[in-house]
Length: 113
Length: 113
DNA sequence: CAGAATCCGTTTAGATACTG
DNA sequence: CAGTATCTAAACGGATTCTG
Image: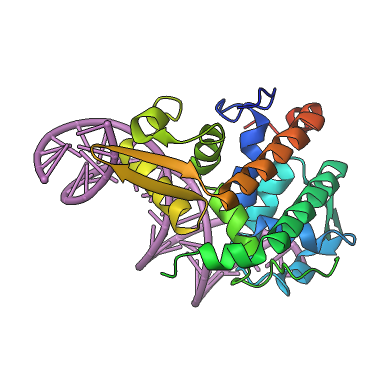
């Protein structure tokens, strides 16, 4: 194994944080939805077909981890990517590109349930 | 949002598979453990401090998705990365590098629970 | 509008004991 | 050695109802 400061075998290491957070069913979608700028709660609910409770949970976690910021003004609330969140979005896109590059293998490999 | 064939908003799309599978608590560790070659079940259990049941579950899923292969010979069983799994391991390493590049921000941003 | 509260079913992790 | 079986507890997702 390549020695890295990012030691996934250490539970405290932030490298374990990213897969766990992205493993959240809705978090990657939230990140992608915010790529083009701030969105309100109700705007996120249209493309992301999760219940209000579940979406809120995702947003709170992303906020706590510093990927998303929340700004309330009057009745409306804006969610936006932080600089760290934008950086993560780039990482996510590189992932999608990996998926595209391995598309057929991914579909073929998968044992149908 | 950049238009990609990998559409995370489509539940069937394999791009959703990767974050979900990597969100598995032990899967990323399994992948890393197999980077240097095949390992037996008991060898995996040393660095990966999960119960036999949980580790088995992870391995079965990784096998089903085509990232890991299982080969039994006599009493011993070898697990190894498939070509697809090796490719994923590279992706995982790029993730760790991203973590290292954003180390301080990740630690600072994180709201202590 | 942006959630919070509640309830419910499923999934997951973990510990323990057992087996071919 | 490489699991399986069983049980428990916690986490997660979803639907519904309510509220400032």
